[in-house]
Image 1: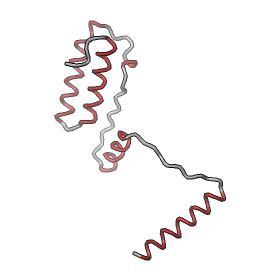
Image 2: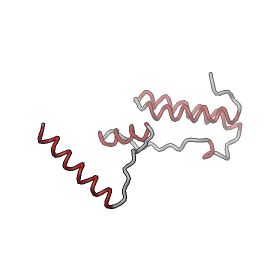
Image 3: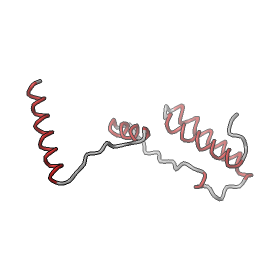
Length: 110
């Protein structure tokens, strides 16, 4: 244990010296929880890259007569994702449905 601690201190000293010589100021990183969850799943080999863009802006040509079918299709996709235990993906779809309902005034809550 003592050897591991002394090695850590030695490396920390080298890193600090390097940072001072090169004018580097260490900073903390900030990530969204979803980024961390995705990285964890990728590392475990269980990730499927389901990059569904959120936001209704990707559907600018949507008409009000198409809304019921679109919402129904998204709800079905959300249900399937939840059954497959892909809860983060299902939550993104849920948020998208809510956003669509709010934009078109069809009531976001059931």
